[in-house]
Length: 355
Image (cartoon, rainbow, N blue to C red):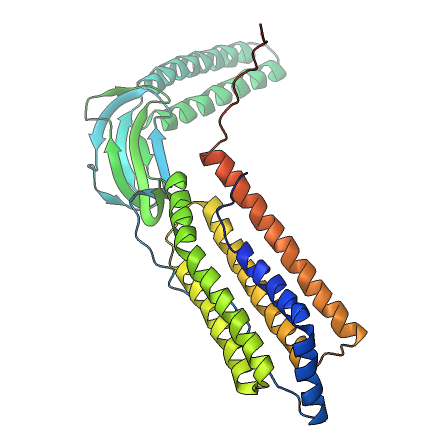
């Protein structure tokens, strides 16, 4: 039979045990209740319900800091690097020029555009002479002039593109890598620089889920006997207080037990785990402890101070009990899943036919 890694179920057993003790000692309980009723004095129980507390969220862990923003700057055109203005480790601002590339392909485009424009100018002169002698119409001359203007615009555009290409930083940061030197020839898409923004960092931590699981197992073993002894003492002290009709002892028994539960939660908070699955177990365990402690206080008050409950009070108590059962069922489910993950049951050997 599988043993779940969490023994908080003992707390649920403790509640059931209290009810059992009260019912088992019904005669003594009724006698004590009758005496109290004759004196018309209720035993007021004041107890704190275990709740969550603020804890120190700082922890130490090994990991690697990574920049949240990291970009590789690539060449958009081919050409030869004529200047590199930064080094690795240099701080740069957004839009700062990092390198200058002489666009060789753009120079070819300028030459081609210049040739087309020269031809267009020659054609305009030819058509103007023909128009003067009546060889062409005004419409034909205007068409040639329009073509020459278009060629001129293309030349100007090519000349602008052929100017030195500036490689600029896309954001402020630090040059992490420099892949070019003056004189290098680059092609479109080639990585030139790697720039990172270290103004905002992220820590990458490798989580040891199995190690965290073992921490939880060890914590559980350490707490098991402590919880059992605390619950046994609580039952004994509570029954003795009822029999003695001692209000202070009843209150003391409940407060002592609540403190033991608080100590359990404190020790659980101190358990340093990083894996999300183990953290979920921790939180669910604390939830079970809090619900169980609150239900225990309600049970004590119902039994000692106000045996006759209204339907509304009975409904509220039943809802809390149901919430505790559901929380414990979820905790057991999570525990079994982890146990199967890290301690899977051995595969049974195939049955052999009897000869």
